[in-house]
Image (cartoon, rainbow, N blue to C red):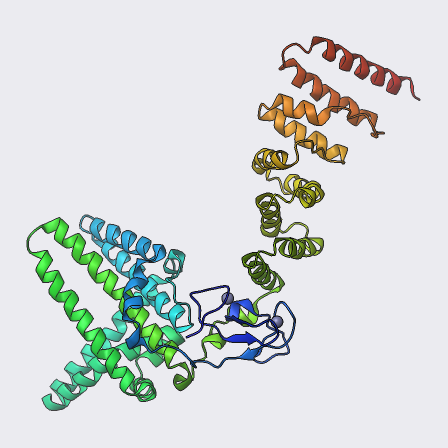
Length: 449
Ligand SMILES: [Zn+2]
Ligand SMILES: [Zn+2]
């Protein structure tokens, strides 16, 4: 199986014959006129080769080790911790137990979904924070329909038919979950024809998966009995953790089976992502910049952000990305050119809390930096003064009157300068000079008609 050069955990879907690298759907440029399996290289702009859907994907039964390591990613560990903690609280407040189950299963379903799309790393915790209760209702609906239909059949028609139906229902349960995750459609998830379609498409692979899931879920039961008897709280915590861990592995495996059989299931991992086709300019830009950064092409990435800011000067995310990139790469020259635009943006968008810390980061690279705009100089100085950095503020206001034709502005700046000097010892003489200068300007303004 081949992976994206920029995302070592994601299955590659394209290859650039020009630049010789493999890329996932994220790392290619989708062009509006292109079909779902066509994309252009971000670097050379040539059309890339589509590698096909499931071609070259390792079968799920050969990657057990990885499947069991899947929940050990920090994202999944957080979910395990949070859902176990809420479950334990559920001892005191019964409704919380339900919430924990909803949260865990929402996360399990997003593991299934993401894996089905070829993302082999546990998704972020936020994917489980909404819609969990609806999903839980759907799961309960599937299970009650399964049990209910068996009972009705056995009681109303014949017990033998009931048993056969019960076997089918048990067999079809993973298929129901997989369909629910793929289509988010309850009607399809409980439709036996859909189950048969999926089982038929996967063939023997489905039965291997089913057996694995059966073994795993029964071993969870056995473990719960084993640990549960001795230490009440410890045993309970351990069994909740173990069963949640297994649930994530099982849903990951189901997702992987969809990923592996995507061609046969008529499921294209790429088409289903939705976001891929709908990415806006900014998403594409971020994807491309991400690739350049991973290649160490910091200047090119910075230029991309720059060009974007020409069109969208108030985009807060790109402004931050560019400033942080220039600081992190110690690009003093580029930072000097961008700083004025950046701090203006911070003042315009009233993000004053960022001003002084980022200004200090700038000074570490450019100790003599002074903005060319007088207005920005006063704004920065005012901000530093408010935070008690009197020397920093005074440095910005030094020689303020040079090239500044606005007398009122100069007076205001030097009044602030005086306030700063008042806080700095041994500046009496200097203060007198500034006071004299202010008096002179005031007098000049009053003498004018
Ligand atoms: Zn990628
Ligand atoms: Zn290329």
